[in-house]
Image (cartoon, rainbow, N blue to C red; front, side):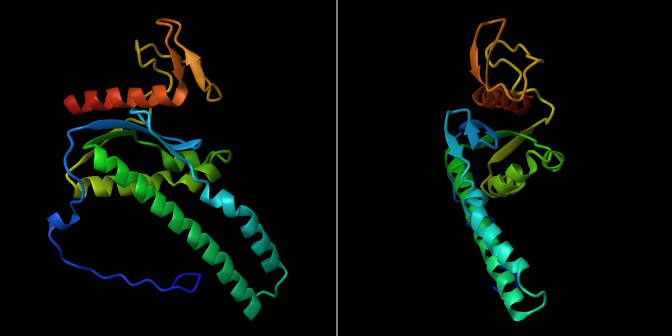
Length: 216
């Protein structure tokens, strides 16, 4: 039983591996980058937006929590209000997970090899300025769903080392801009003169590094 009063039933079924295969082979590869501004950016230029499911219902949640604070703890009205709040959070979670599956399915339908950074999600959550935004997009959940579905469909997710300087490396000549700040969204390489969008440049480097690792 969930906090919202709903019940879930889990059934174990023995099926063949072929039942899980949903996506055909394409022999194509892609680099992806996860972010807060945009949820997923691909090296093919496709962008999956951050839907901000929590942000859209934040005012509603605050109102419900304010009403809860005025009710006597332990009373019937108190428990009813708790269920109302739980239902809102449950709806947000369902919307977020549905969107994650939608994005993962679109990627696996097109590509056999997907390269992405091995993000230190737990470490990022310790940054109080980013924690709320990171929880909202669900990086860890996305990684788990992508890895599981890729395995079921005989496709591969290649993780790039978390310390690889994907944003700071020029995708044209390989120069590393060590002074690049997080606030700088665009920068020009002083060696080859290439002008980079920070996120797209990062995802190109993830693609190249992923190919190098796969070929090794």
